[in-house]
Image (cartoon, rainbow, N blue to C red; front, side):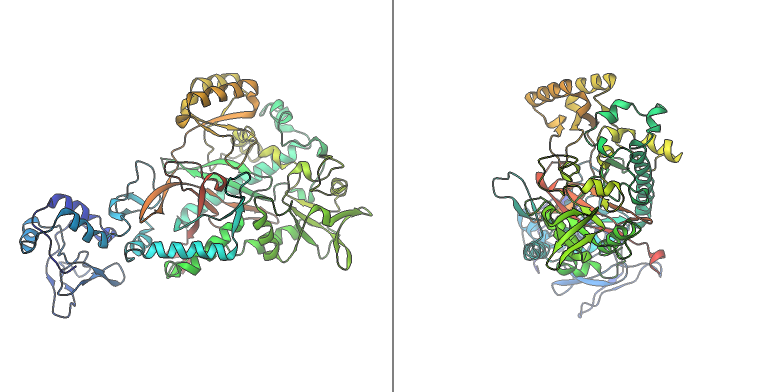
Length: 595
């Protein structure tokens, strides 16, 4: 690093590179002068104004130069005096030794080990960078921290994070995968940052949405006023796979149906946040939100220094509080259990994790029975009455006596107890009627109808193939649209038109024509990107966000939620079952609210 630069290379190319190397947030184009170096490498800057500070690099007699940042200084390896890069001056300094461009690039690699200066947004809305080395407002501190890391340091920490995930047993299951079902949770160490001001806007939109959806579900199982008033067609409900006729007229405890919701959000190329879909049956993934934060704190604690990041660790406490709130009134000290289908379920890790964190029993259907009009749990001390069941099995499997007769996962007679109000089920059976991607298109009208308000968080434009006019449009523009089945999850059954073959497009044309109610189409949203460690450098990868909403005595939303990232280059499918991973999501409290 002591060798000078060669005078035989493209200075304009070098200037372009240097302007955006790792100190990019603090560089500016104004000529900096009066830099004084003494033999002890104590660099002093005499600016034109008292408030000026050094934003460049200075050649010293050693390998390091001191860089003065916003609040502190730190050492960086360099050997270049830099202000605006004076080609004549630099050329004079480099005459003594010749170097090839490859050698220069190797040296510059030490200055920019993660390739921040060359970060390419590829025309997408990137949530950390506006361009090569140029950080968005509010995340400069993170860019500075990443840029100051020595070569290979982030990769070592990523390896440590992967090791921690393995040791902690943080896994998920993929059905039918050739390499086995249980996989270590894929995690990228670079966090996604959301400023508190934007998060408050998201919170308002989600609370509005969940109130309207809860009123809609209640309406569907009672008077169906929204249909009688012509806001929604009746066939949309009668043909919904999530609509349970068996519970028509039922009333859940405290009138709450959707106790737990995972709402998928995306940011488009315009920077606007949109709701992509609602998950109101058995939304999964919240355990990974908590564990991602724990792994981050273990492997990269320095990132948290001096930052007020809203906590996610209180979710199990809030969950238990909500479950106890909706218990039957006669239960003074309600017994809560988590009902799981068992070890082969893709979210079994989460079932175990949440039960353990709440301090409640994890059970399967065979552990429960109905006796004397109540649900009981088998224990080593005999039967114990159960008041609240946080069920992680689908509606159809809850009770073989009332729903699917071949179910071995549920409890015989459970729905009869539920109808009498002697046990609470979370989420309430029947919430899938609002989990339908065709019903999703009506949520703006629901909000206006039930709340008398305009929607805060907009939907993605959606074409319903059940409507003849919209279906014809979809069939004519299939190659431009994303086509989704109305009741699938996990990223399965989706056709991404721009990436589809002629054979795939023709297959989906036939599927739509044979069952138009089961398909919707949306424009291909240019999902925002977040820097992700890919090999030895940062590259943008597409992300979505799933905040988790608890509806009990009040509405609680875990700050941030689960950021899912499409780890496959060019992919927009973020589901872990389809090659996606996750990131820790930070909601960064503003300085004003931190005090």
